[in-house]
Image (cartoon, rainbow, N blue to C red; front, side, top):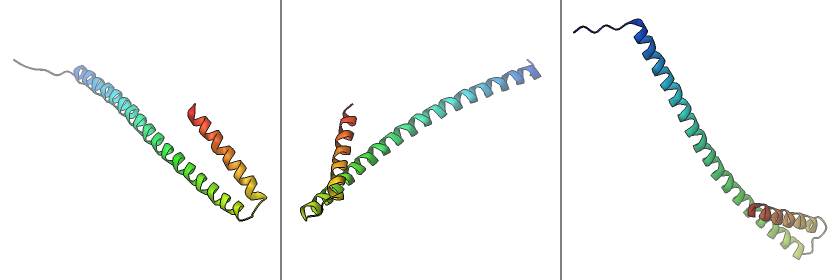
Length: 94
């Protein structure tokens, strides 16, 4: 039994392998994209939590200044931070 391989057979095989490679590459790219998106979402969630904690600490510092008699910009800053935290809390619920 003699096996002969023609040029057309090699070309068809190369086309098939290329198509499978492209499809596999697209699937891998989509998988990596979704994984990266999930990781970024978790990182942003941690950053938001940290920023909220920093805002509460800043608010406590401003409250201490106000208790010591500082007024004016301290009161204005406290009001703006409290307003921001309230709005952020309501946006988080939705």
